[in-house]
Length: 253
Ligand code: 13P
Image (cartoon, rainbow, N blue to C red; front, side, top):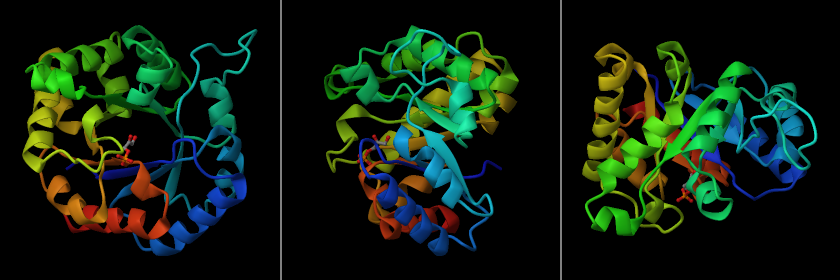
């Protein structure tokens, strides 16, 4: 049985004190939740303060990106080791916003994934097609390209330390959520790809999240799909109550 994983990607939002307030409120709402893996991903500057505010290890801390070099003359970058030092155990990698606005490609995503794993951080690897690609019938090939590119060279154990997040770009921040069937179809495709590269057992163990306009109202239907193991949540993770509502939906599944 795969444990559901609900992660909040706060993107470029919240000051340090707002971030601490949000996790403090959230912790009270999820105090009795143990059957769902809960993760929050604040901005870099708030990581240490949020780490200090997190009690009892009920909520895991994630960064939103990293750089693959360990240290050196790389102005502005943050390494996997430094994220661990700040209290992270996860890092989001290859989000479509990074691919779109910051030119990230599969090769960079793969380097980031490997550096995360080397530092014992669990990468949350984002993959997803644009609307035009879906309309052109290219969803499966785009997903294959993203998934295979990101996991190039990973052992089965490394893969199983990772989480994959299917985030169709057209569903991110648009309110236009994928239907449960659309999500299920792509998640099953990802599992088939992993079964081909590794084994059926490995493919059946990895957690695959859906992301894109997930809200408390649509979470139950999405999470009830057999291959949907959780959600990567943007907007609805910025308030404790709506994020807790999605966690509650994951619990009921
Ligand atoms: P929204 O939930 O705001 O659509 O964002 C999804 C996302 O990009 C999470 O990484």
